[in-house]
Amino acid sequence: MVRPWIGLVVLSLGVVAAEPPKPVRVPLKAPHESTIPEGPVGEAIRLGQKVFTNTPLHAPKYSGNALSCSSCHLDAGKAPHAAPMVGLWASFPTYLPRAGRVGTMEDRINGCFLRSMNGKPLPTGSEEMRCLLAYVWWLSKDVPVGAEVVGRGNPPLQAPAPADPERGKAVYARACAACHGEDGLGSADVPPLWGPRSFNLGAGMARTSKAAAFVKANMSGLGGSDPLSAQDAYDVSAYFTHQPRPDFPDKVKDWPKGGKPADSRY
Ligand code: HEC
Ligand code: HEC
Image (tube, rainbow, N blue to C red; front, side, top):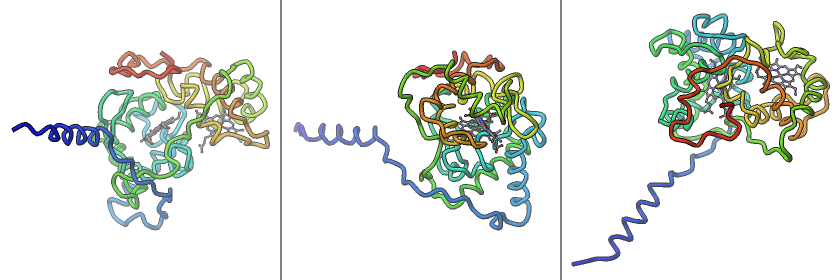
């Protein structure tokens, strides 16, 4: 006997399956240092924190430039709106559109090693990788699996008008050069924004929209300069991201399933 409603039930189940439930949102709260346990796990967490905050010193075989993870993931990965690591353990594995497949935390960390650090991937069993994982795990220990912290990523920013790198050059001179240098090469205390010791073309930060989001949220009004408008952030980002920087030869493998963003550099 034909029961037409069975089809309907199957159809609606299909719709439910296609839309995953929205993650629970929890406030960002980094655990206190005193909660790092004694013993080998605590030692791994502490070494992971060192790799994170001084990557060239503690992962010299894999780091390829002057940056540390914490140059962009500010306050040792604890700052909201600067792509914090707090709670991130609960969000991986996840689909990574640039890779066109589901990726683990290790895959994502190596994405930044290859691109943001212009370096080499950490082998899975390496001490550096195990310690970085321990650090992210500890930072995430109070966030339930599947939940997402408020302040994850860099808050997306819309440009009121198309970005103008010429205007951006003037914004750079008034709001950035005092720290990052007229030549963008940074100093002993400030990381470079371009040149051979900066992130490569494949990095998220090389995209104007991603850089503008980071800059507006984290680099506005520093050193006594006027706060940046959204347009200033776009203009200055169009300027500094397009200065000379290392290439990323593996870029040809990105976005294998399509969906390449319009401001990708290749
Ligand atoms: C030049 C800046 C820069 C540096 C240096 C950098 N990253 Fe990133 N990282 C980013 C950006 C940009 C994103 C994407 C954030 C977003 O999606 O909004 C990101 C994303 C991530 C993510 C995923 C975050 C999320 O919310 O899904 C992880 C994990 C990560 N980075 C780890 C690292 C580690 C570990 C290092 C050091 C080896 C590092 N990053 C160095 C810029 C950087
Ligand atoms: C008062 C000094 C200061 C000013 C002014 C400043 N920055 Fe930064 N910037 C820093 C420091 C320091 C870091 C690294 C953060 C850390 O290590 O904690 C950083 C990190 C960055 C990064 C990520 C790391 C890298 O090297 O790519 C970008 C991008 C950036 N700044 C862009 C800008 C832009 C654009 C401006 C101007 C609108 C600006 N900054 C103004 C001090 C400054």
